[in-house]
Length: 207
Image (cartoon, rainbow, N blue to C red; front, side, top):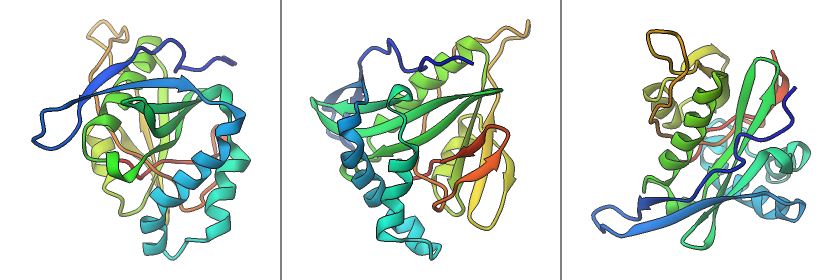
């Protein structure tokens, strides 16, 4: 199995930093380090709280511990915007593709195109290698509409989670091609779900 990360070598990009502002924000991805874990756990708790409370699943300790238990620095990148911490994303190798997990943006940076820019970059990379991408999104999360718009389809669902898959974009010859897409993210109701790739964490709280 590939032990590298799809995030390696991604170059910085630009997004418009506010509705109607016209200001361009610089963003980049850096490799996560072990010392990032508590900052990322706190971000997860902040981003996931509204949806988890809506579903009656929020727990102050558990929401942070899920990230600590599954944190994989070698497959995770920290998102940096205008030189400051902005979020994180994990793209983990699996037997039949990749799992997109722990994709969170700071609330004050949501809705500005940053999540879309990051996801577009990741999906261009997975399209180029011709692999499936899977994720979980919470029931009722606005993230589901965004994922569907960008090529993800429902594979399975339960009262808490919607399990989605995206096949690589391809041209008529069947060869993978790069494609422009966009996104948001979050998690699976504390959900660790046994699936084709084993236990995993999903996404659902970054617009």
